[in-house]
Structures are given as structure tokens and as C-alpha cells.
Length: 585
Image (cartoon, rainbow, N blue to C red):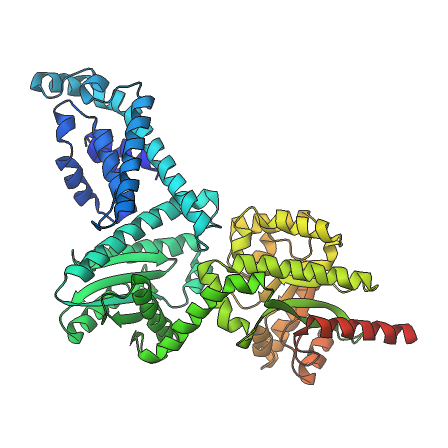
């Protein structure tokens, strides 16, 4: 429901305009409606005297929550907040043709009982207040959007957020600001011990795949409602992203803290007969001068360790987690230089035809060759840059490196070795990737068929399917990566125009363990053939696997049995040598 729809609903419930407007923004700041209505009632005095319009007082409350300052030394934020206040009042007065008083808007002096009675009798609030309310909301949303635009220009994590998700992100920023202010005040004023508790849902992706993303959103709303019930006014919580939540609480001793966490676990364990299992990471604050981000990072490390622990779902931060923290800090501090100094490079893993015993293509994989640390493998840096949003820039870099390699091969007369690159979900949710890919193809003057796009199998998602369809219409070859690793393989084949499916390594190994599994594998390959889809098996490591795949009709393979990922020059020389051998024959 939009801010305007909420405001209209509150007006029809006989709340005055100050309550209706601030109530519409309440959830954006983590406030319940009862608290929002109480606050806005106290600030509606001028309106009730027929003076300043309640829309102005409520809007200034919204601006205060978004742009106000809580540190008396933060003069820059104080000046910024005051500027935003002045901007709003000026724009409101212009939009209302100079009319800013309640008595002028309604045409009645509501400070007089007999005049107020006429206002109610004639229904003037519903007739005349919506103009001021809608104008106020338009101005507020525009100012918040401009605020987000400024943040996006300097934030790696937010700069690639699509415009259609802007208001969702703004709400998150507002909540985040409110949360940080409360936590900072708690750290400064509390005489009790303080703990950061971060938790998420184990295998939340499976919940989304099995029940749909709408159900997943309902799960997240349910957890927020349960947190509202469990937390008191000195316990603050926020949904950081997706299914990751943070609670900051006071506590007297560890027994009390453990009891609180068990209560959170108990209250969030079951939603509509679906059992949810949480992983809790806890950091107990020792140094209150530490930055909030560092405290959160420590809780996050403990949470991630809890996800891997099969015995316990609650783990406290330990000093040995520092290595992970230092690794993250190193990656974030060096990733920009790694791009500009070309420390990232592509490794190419060949794809082979079993029957021809020759290379039919390659997959471009990323490696980080740091001048001091040496080789840094993807499992060490990919999770970090996926979280902070840098993955998008790295993918663009790898796409261009692949195009450059294809052009290099073309110059040497090698025209039959397509290279596939990964296209992640984040690219398929924006409007940039198609243009960037097309521009790269044009800049390097290479055939589109030689740059293949791998899309990881995922749950049904109409937006992703539509973007994949556009890529297909642009002439790109699409490969479904990790087929068999999720729970929607067959459904997504109906929605997305793939050319090739890549059988996930674990799926293939599991299917080869029994006669029933081999039959399923054979039927998948038969189905793909009837659908006129190519099939490529990943992770092929043994002769037995090669023979089985050949017997059931799968000719394209990739794996250590044939070749490991190798540096660009090594793969280039391999292609040249193969070409010379074929020419000699």
C-alpha cells in the first residue's frame, strides 16, 4: 500500500491530517501506529488552533526522522536537516498557492466549536485535506528519492539498485538510520551489558523455491511481527537484508541473554505449518567506542559459523573469527585497485566433445592474482563482493576480458571456440546488462554466438525470465548453469528460453550412485533432446563418468578428467596446438 493510500485510509477512519500523514510513514521508521499517532497528536496543536496545516507539522516529523541529527556535535547534519525543512516549507507553500494555515484550507476556523461542527457536517476534511496531503507526500517522496540518488553515487552497495525498487530501499535506509541512532544512544547511556544478535533462516532459498517468493516475503513479515512482540523499548531490531535480522539488547548476565535468544528462536520457529530453523550469531560488546559496523561484522561472523555447525544454532563471537574479519577488510580495501591494476584475470576451463575428443568451447572463471598475497581463489572473495555489490563491476570486467580473448582467437583464425560468462541475478534485475553486453560485442566486433551467457538456475521469477527472453531476442546463446541443484528445474525451462542446460556436478554424481538415479539422468538427457536443448555435464572427473554419459547420449562435458581451469595464455596455446594438429592431419 502506498503512502497516499494509507493516508486516505486513515482519513476515512477519522484521524486528522497530521496523524494520517505521519502514520502513513510510520513503518518506514520502525514505528508502530499507536506510537506514531500519539507523537503526531502532540505536534498537532497549531493545526487545532486553525494555524499551521497539520500536513506541515507531520511532514517535518518525517524529515526529522530521515535527516535530523542526534549528536549535538554533528553540525553538518544539523545544517543539512534545517535546509531540508526550509526546502519542504517553500515547496509546500508554492504548491498550495501560499495557503499554509488550516483555517484557510478548510475555509473554517476549527478553533471554534461551532465552526468545527460545520467542518464535520459538511465533510470538509475529506473534501479539502487530500490536496495538501497528496502534495506533502509528493514533496517528501521526491526529497527522499533525491537523498537516495546522492547516496547511490557514493555507495557500492546501493548504486545499482533499480529505480523501481527505490522506495523499498529508502524505507530500508530510513529504518537503518533510526536503528543506528537508537543503538548509538543505547551504547552511550546504558549501564547494562549489550549484545548484538544477528540471525537468518537456514536454507531460506529452499523456502522461496518450494513455496514461492510471495510466501517468503510473508515469512519475513511474520518474523518482524514476532520481533515486535519479543522486544521491549530498550531492545532494537532491524531486517538488514533478505532474511538477515539484527537485534541489539541489554542484558544482565549470559543466562538472561541465552534465555532471550531461545525465546526469539521459539517465537520464529513455525509459520503456517512450515518449520523454520534459525542460525544465531552473538557478539557481546566489550569496547563501546568500536564502530557499529565492526560490532555487526562480529555478530555476522558468528552467525555464518552457526550456519555451518550441525550441533548448535547459537554461537558467540570468538577471537579466532578475526581472521575472517581481516580478510573481508582486505578484500574491500583492495577490490577497486584490483580492477584498475588488472589484478583480476580470467582462467578458462575447456568444454569437450566426448565423441570427437576435442575442445568445443570454454567457461571464463575469475582469479585474483594479488602482487603480495599471490593467488586468491573465488571462494575467498566472491561472497564478500556479492554482499557489498562490487560483483557487478567485476562481472563487467570479466565479460570484457572474455570478449578480448575471443577477438584474440579470431585474429589467429580460431573461430569455433565460444566462451561462456556468468550473468548473475543482480544483472537480470536491472536495465543495464543488455546494453553493456551489446556494446562490448560491437566494440570488439565479435559474433554474438561466441559469447555465451550462463544463468544460474533459480526459482520462478517473471522479471528474470523476461530479461533472459530479451537477451535471447538479442541473439545471445543462453546456458542454464547448475541444473538440478535447485527445486524448479523443470518449471524454469518453460519460462526461460535456454539453449543448453549444464548438469550440476553434485546432481550428476548423486544420480550415478544407483540404477534409479542413472535412469533419471538418462531421462533428463532424453527430455532435453526432445526439447532441442543441448546438455553439458559439469564436474566430470573419472573415466566411468565419461563412459556412462556417452552411453546415455550426453556428448558435451567439462571437468578435471579433461582439463582444469587454466590461464588465458595456456588455453590459447592449447587451441593453437590443436589447430595445428588438425591441420597436419
